[in-house]
Image (cartoon, rainbow, N blue to C red; front, side, top):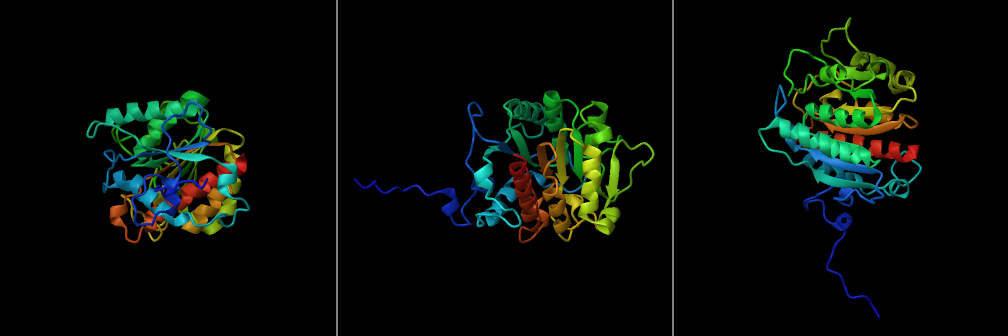
Length: 309
């Protein structure tokens, strides 16, 4: 007997203008128990810790929306395999917290992340401003011990003069709390002032990256990180504003999206246990340039995790 016609439409068949509820229109997940997913994607629409222009709370929505443009290739260039053949990723939606009460964000995000990492899943998290990295690092360090940090940014975010709820003090507090292995950590694309003599991480500034290229950067990353478990934090303002104008604190003379993608792709073999992608503020953009760049970086991360399997 022929099956009855279905009135259900797969997300991948919907037009681009239909509201998207997940990254790449991947399946939604609510239960981690007995789940076979490899990577859990979460959104954290929080920007109360910004020191410049607000708007990163719309980052998860923007990244998911732009990701629809990346769905058409069964085998994405330049990879030689189809992502779905090697990796199962699911979107858990956005974190819930009380607006105006940053501590609820901290508590809820730590608990959310710890639940995921204890289940043996890799995390991919969309911010939100860069403050969200601190509770994420707390959860990963609680599970794995101090992690190597691979950090792309225009700013070191290691400043001690701000408050606890400040996207510029994230790695100052992370170091103070022993969440990261400073000897194994590296920052890439920096092009703002920092205290060089007392800085805890190796820094490859944007001028050096642009002069030497992604292959030299990868040599430094591999030498620095070694076989340590590594957490990747990608602030979209690490890119030059020509490629990512939609962000709260844009700084000129950054790296290109081509260079960034080559660096991400080159991390195959590095023991990456989680990633966040932060500071996308779509309101300062047009044509989804920044959101598309962010979605593409995130997709390359998924391919790296798949290749590592």
